[in-house]
Image (tube, rainbow over all chains, first blue to last red):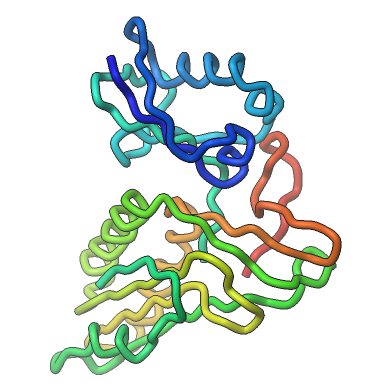
Length: 81
Length: 146
């Protein structure tokens, strides 16, 4: 299952990337993927702030299962305007 | 009209986009970079966006404005990149038959944009920089914004 990951703002700095493509070996939820990324990238693991998730540009909760070709975004607290 | 731009926002264009013969009022909100925040001087702000999703959410707010307040038209532009002191980071224009709806709709639109649209500001101050918004835990006090 191929997914595209997008990181922004503080999470982009911590992930060291704004866009990553990734093959997931098995079905997982957005929350599972986030936990996986936190283990892989210590700077993400150290982040203790709030995060919201979006799949295909819609906000979702962490229980949302991922599907092939999903774009998953990791969204720290927004501060537009 | 909904835009994310990396240059100065043209307010006149937004006004022209919402003007209607049946509208008697246009209310415009302009958010500008303030030279202080949380008790410290601000040098500049720098904005980043998830542009595809930000535009979707802006459109959605626009639809809500039309339905909920009976506005005749809405336009929004948000700037990304560096926004210097006094420059506009966001402009929202709303037209309506009467001013009451236009004021309320515009207020709703900026309040909602600040809650939901995936855009972030980084504050550059003397001696450092920080992303605005709670970065540690959900309950810590955050830098207050306009």
